[in-house]
Image (cartoon, rainbow, N blue to C red):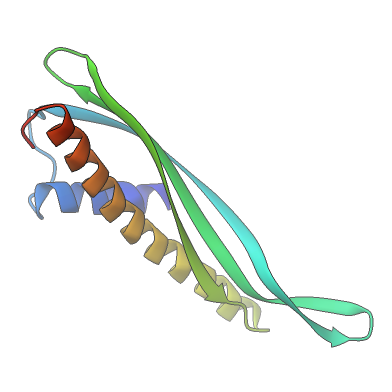
Amino acid sequence: YAQQVRNNLIFGLGQGAGEPATPAYILDLGVTELVESAALVQIQTDEDEPTAGTVTLTSSYVLTDASTGTVIATGKRSVPSSFDRPRQEYASYRAQIDAENRAARELADLLRLSVAQDLVKHGKKA
């Protein structure tokens, strides 16, 4: 999930061109994941089974000017993504992976916008 956030962010910031050879800014990125059961349905009298879940990806970042080494901004962003948990084990696993992928794309977009706002706030060029 962290690699996906990174790849989507590089694609979004570079508009598909990849990483620049000499970047003007350095983005130090940390990504964590939390998977929770969102709903329980009683299947038998003494057993509850989770039927929905939520993947939450959270990223903290530090934006630094590459030429001077000064920190421009720091921030933290979070994106939840819900998914169904069917009874089949593989289908449940695949649904969670798909939710991670969605959350990674959305988090990368959110980070791209946050970095752009930070650069504008500090009078820097994107």
